[in-house]
Image (cartoon, rainbow, N blue to C red; front, side, top):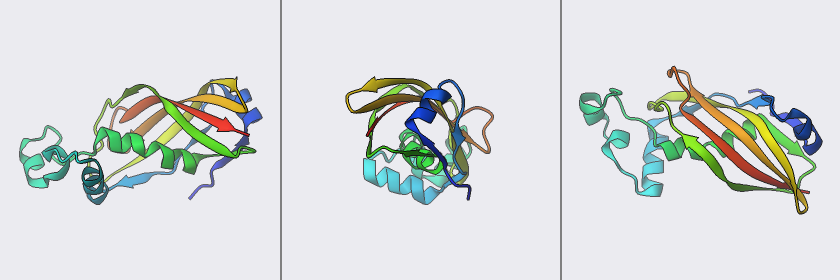
Length: 153
């Protein structure tokens, strides 16, 4: 396991427009998908019914929920980047979220992070990251999003 890139807010300022880190590969198992379905109540067969997915899904197997993939961004960012000198980070929202390709059950995913903007806010900074999640088995990204995070000193 590779250690997270350790940076400061000043480093982020200097890195706008450049990819700064990638996460480790993370397995998305059928157990993860089942647990997410239970937690959210989204029990659509394409996520849970392995036999039906083999027969009827264009993917030939179950796939992760798009929102499961999106929710893993926090874990993936934590693996990739450690921001020093901040006392708190707040998820401020997302822009332009897309799921261009499915995450097949049993796939491994990883994310790449690029700060695209940084602005001062009261007692901190607001960073917008371009987050691109890829799967080993996919030709296209499985999730792309602009993620807005506020870091407070």
